[in-house]
Image (cartoon, rainbow, N blue to C red; front, side, top):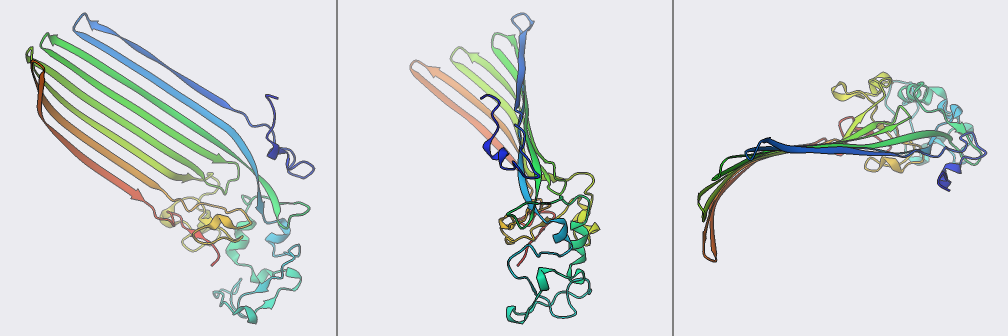
Length: 339
């Protein structure tokens, strides 16, 4: 019962994929605190730390890819008739961009087999690359099936340190520094799927001085800074991928010499929803968002108490530094999808 597998992991029973194993779960949280006096009744310190390593169970999923026969243009397993969309002498290996014909003027591919000279060289280079997933023909499926194992981690570290100083009865000072990091990577076993990382980093510091002019008259001065850096959508590829977009012949396939493969959806979908196709979308358009903000704060408060009344007067200044980046919906690598 406690080692029960997920029901969907058994869907491959009797096929080349087979039954996928029970995923492992590892959650570790650790930390500690330390504090005490440095100088009796004068100087004190306190510190704490907490870390988290939450490794979520790897999830194995089947993806639809082209079979070895289909990578050569043989789509005879497809019941829908395929037509040549290009005018004679254009498209494929001709070196001339495909001149799209009206549907009524297109000729069918005999037996749904696309001649090798009508296959785009970039397509051929991609699907024959060793990194392209090997599709296993499965009864009842036109396309091949492959397995991708995805692993997710949530790593966090956070800590604080504080010092309190009381030089004399009328004065109290403290200084505090806090730091928190969140690093959440997601990895895929299929090299042509991008590995993504979401990050969050927080820094906060403050200095405070309270002075008593009289038992009923206090002044408090505080200075602080707070920095937050958030990044989502960072994508990295297996080192073997390199600049595969350029390697297979996609024009400007790796803009800015970025490693990886642009998001490719040649199994359906659209430019705004490339994942809607039948075949797995390979690569990544790398839609990145970065948000970096720093707030500097200074305030001074004078507190006067008289009988049942308390009067406060003061000054506060906040300065905001904002630095925001968004790569756009097309991302840094871009995407290619059928019109």
